[in-house]
Image 1 (cartoon, rainbow, N blue to C red):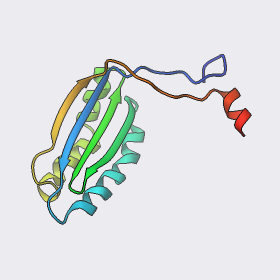
Image 2: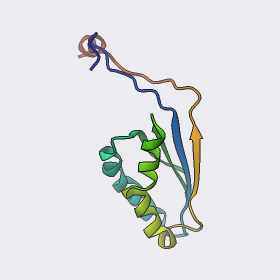
Image 3: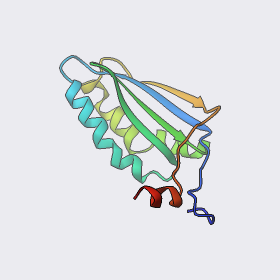
Image 4: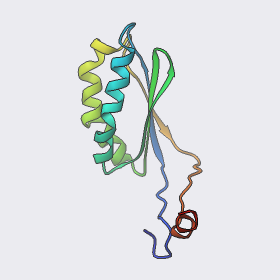
Length: 120
C-alpha cells in the first residue's frame, strides 16, 4: 500500500505473448493445463500480470508482463515454461510461438482505500 492510502502501481516494461494451437481433441486438456498454471504464475515474484486466454476453439495464448528483463527471463525458464515444453508434443499442433514484447503504454485500474470503503 502506498503511504497516501493508494496502491502502488509498478509499470510493466516487458511482456511475453505466446500463441498456442491445440491438437484436435486436446482443447479441454489445453484449457485445464493453462488454468493449472495460474498458481505457478502467482508464485513468480517478477511476473506482474499473467493471462491465459482462448482466442478460438483450438487457439490459445498466454500474455505476461514484467517490470524488468530479469523477471521475464526467470519466467521463460520457470515452471510454466518447463510444463509447456514437456507437454508440447502431446497437446499442441505446432510449437508454441513465443514473442518478447516491449510495453509502450499501460492503462491500469487501481482502487484506493477511499473508493473501496465508499462502495462497501
